[in-house]
Length: 372
Ligand code: GLY
Image (cartoon, rainbow, N blue to C red):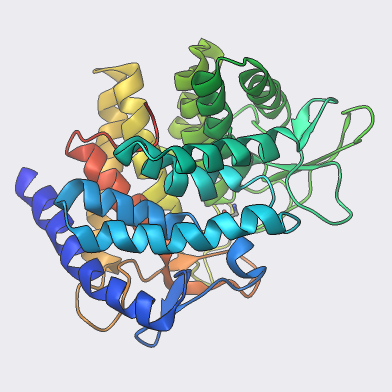
């Protein structure tokens, strides 16, 4: 098994060494790849929520391999993302993904003070989206009461900011959002809603509509992955056992629904046909389960480690392109069950980010590069 981890990581380094050259030539922040080329964000230009995964991947590969080209590419894209902090109005709650993985990792790995300030700036933007009725607002436009399970992944930016500044307000906001999410998103069986619409004045939950999954009340798999990983991060940030218990409940639900071939559908409640697989969900859940395994320790953790390994092996065996045909690795990534224009059964870069992150965790590496 150790050989498989090392060999797969080395193949990732070799692939992205070539893909970096292409991204620079195309002057793009890779979002997905098609026809042998990178494709940038489908909406909102460089403010699109996934912009941090490419520099995040670059920092991971730099940390692993020491190759300078990865660091330079991370810095090229960081400059583009920092410009978006000033543009501001297209940014949303996903600034955690965007700026922890880029500026946060940059600061931690090199001590760069400007990168630290930019990360703090992003934390203030996230804190500014908090509604004192008890939740962090997700998207922009006419949706002031909308919150989504994905936001659990962004709370790390707030825990990071409290640790950096000694100011407990960031953590207090994260805890209030996590408590609301635990109450309103997580169901009895450990599955999660994607969206909850709150009354923005009272905080009362009004509606739980369908989102990127199959339908209202279904279990969009990437949302389950965000939930299990995100509550594990909140346990790590606060030491509150309720968050650990919630992460384990979601993880138990998730691992009971992995397909026989080790892949993961786009929604655990979707019909058998048509096929909709989401490699991002399994890569992200694998990384989250490996984190959880470490937090709960041996015994309970073994089952999470085994499930993670099964998913990662299946991704490599059934969905990875290691040739020069595609600049990215995982080929069956699906942005949403009902096509939203962001990609179906194609390579989407943040699937590759979590795949590499999970392999690094399997190897015992420090995969949260932004964390002091
Ligand atoms: N956070 C949006 C998504 O997972 O597609």
